[in-house]
Image (cartoon, rainbow, N blue to C red):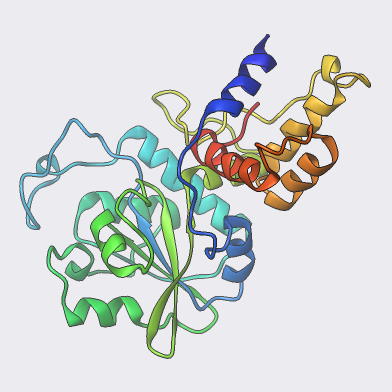
Length: 276
């Protein structure tokens, strides 16, 4: 019954998918190893009960700060990037405590603080700052706020990057390009693959998996093994593997093409993260 309910949820849930020309998170992890990118990282989860009292010279108690989940997520994401061999150079944040602490929990350091990363109005200085090249062989991390990412990352729309998520940029010929977006579901899957468990003190957040996928004996018989294979393909985060599963194991349906199934899969992975 549990697996039936899971599969029912997988069948009917839906949400928008990222632009098709963006690289997947897994491809981004490969390219980031070479350096040369700017990671525009939105601060991790905050306590929404508190509102900012003003900008920028306010005390901590007058600002919206990281929640326990946000602290845990920042630490987990830092561990993921280190485990993936991603070279991190400059780590620059906005003046707000939530961005500075996201960087500190993630990387143990802040290179500098820039008010350009929280400016309410666009400026040529901000554009040049975002377009600057990282130190050769490294990636530059800018921990900032959603409106900065929406304004400076081409193709990123309001709502595309939530707390803890990031847009990866590169500058080619002086022009900034968005290479891809790393969603919380991507961080979840990578954390799970690295053997991670719950990270937040206030209960298991959506962004951190509870445990690895375990296929029970009931799904390892000739009659049920296809369900286990579906779950493995789902958790892989690999559209090519999911496509192969649909091509070999799904019942053909002219009203439900493989491309449509892959769109639903991408939306489910974004909303649910890994299943267990």
